Every structure is written in C-alpha cells, then in structure tokens.
Image (tube, rainbow, N blue to C red; front, side, top):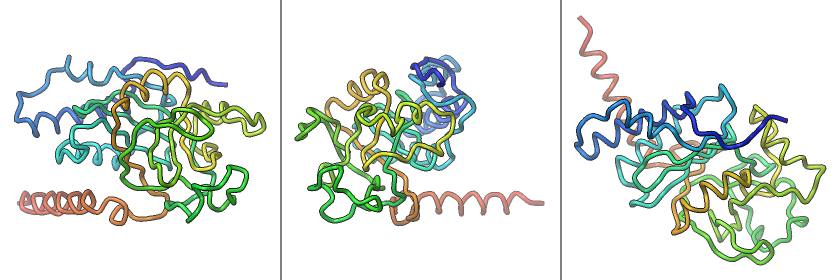
Length: 248
C-alpha cells in the first residue's frame, strides 16, 4: 500500500493552483506582484495527493472565482472533486492549506434522497448512497453515533470524518491510498479523509465553520454553481473576442 503520510512539498498540481490563486489575490487586492518566495510559501502545503495526479482546470477556476468574488465571505473553504476523488482546502484568505484524496458515496449522483438522513446506515438503499453536489455552509457539531463531526450538510447528514475502518472488507484505507480515483466510491454518502489530514488540516481550518463546494457527478455546472458558470462563460466570451481582434 502506498505511503499516504502528509508531506510538505511543491506538488505540481498544488503549485499550479497556488500560482493561479496568487494572481487572483493580487488582482483582487490591487497588491504588488507576488514574488517567487511568496509562491513557494503558498504552494508548500500539506499534500497527500498521489504523485502525478493533476487538479482539474475547473477546480482552479472555481477557487479563483471564490476568492475574487469573496463568495465564502472570508470563511475558509474546501473544493471537493468527486470525479478525481480530491479535496482541496483553503484558508479564509484564499491561500491553499492542503490537498488530499477522499472517499465518497458509493452511488453516483448529486442529490440526497428524501428521508435518507433519518435512516440507519444499513437501511440506506445502495442507489441512495450519494454525496450531494452544491455549495454548503457547515461546521463542527454533535452527532448521534460518532461524537463531534465536521458537518458539510446537516440536513442530509453528510459530514467529513476520518476514514472509517469498522468493516475491513470495504478496504477503505487501501482505497484511500490507491493512486487512482477509480476505487474511491465506497461510503454511505459521507466524505472520508485520512486521520492525519483530518487532524492537521480539517480540524484547525474549519474550527469556526466554513463553506464546502462539491462538484457534480451528473448535473451541469450551470445547475450546481450558476453564478460561477455565468462568470466563467462571460470570461470565455471575452477571451474569444480578444483572440479574434488580435488577428492580422
């Protein structure tokens, strides 16, 4: 099994995300251009992503939009990409705090079935074991059977917590440590991260709450994040006009 210990390094995917966000931060604050040292400090985050795994352009664009528009209202935020099985965590200042693989609901889908929150885990039908997509404001709070947890969406009973190991046959630790996202769909809908990442990054970052952006499996970005999608489309149209006007 691959060693999944937290490392502090300049992971190429995190470097790309950090550089893009530094440009956004500089633009949003009208600050002086950032130095290479600033870039390295922002990129040197707690990283558990597999070597060679990229962060999608959509995630980087969404992070930049959140910072530029102050959509998280100064709270820390996380972008959760179910397709890539990645969780990227940012501070209230928009700077990356950490990145790690995650485990997600075994069923593909973006909505929570009615009544699921009131069921015991064993009673949830397989088709309803989804991790919902969207923007959620959450924080730590009590639960009936797991003590204090980080709620993403209390109403649908979706939380982030350390990898559950109560059912060895599920091989959750092995799935989390694998180098691909293909085997990371195993939970009843909650999101699992390694205990180290949870304790070092999730707990201190979201101690006073935060905002969670979960990318969709099936729904479009227009349905899930309409304001971001509109802004993105407008930027693409603007880029297209500039490209055409530059032709001679």
